[in-house]
Amino acid sequence: MMKKLLCFFLVLAGIAGTGLKSVAATNNSVFTDTVRKKIVHPKTAMSDDDLTKILNKIRQKRNDEEKIATLKTEVTDKALTVDQLITLLNQFLADDSKLECAEYAFPYTTNYKTFLKIIDLFSEEGYKNRLEDFYDKARKW
Image (tube, rainbow, N blue to C red; front, side, top):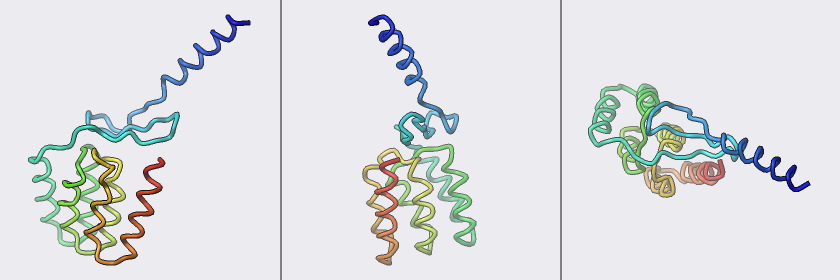
């Protein structure tokens, strides 16, 4: 009976060990723990040079929709700190755009526990509340 239980636990441990799958293919990629269904945030952020390049691309766009598309394209394969994200979000005029980009970039942040520093960028209380609600839900992913 003990041998059967031991074999069962070894098989179970082997299955549990295959729980991480990569969403992107870089060192800074976002991982999803498929067993616990949680995001595993990247450890290292992009360089200041990469941030400057993204910032320049965003500044060349005419409106927030184009800026959003650029941010989403550029951030997808990179990781960033909350301070770098704040720098990028300062390029947007509307709180809607800032909120959309902040929510999109959350899985790519390295220091996600300080994510609510972004709250000061919003002028209206409703957006601040929506960001707090998003953060509360996102921490449980």
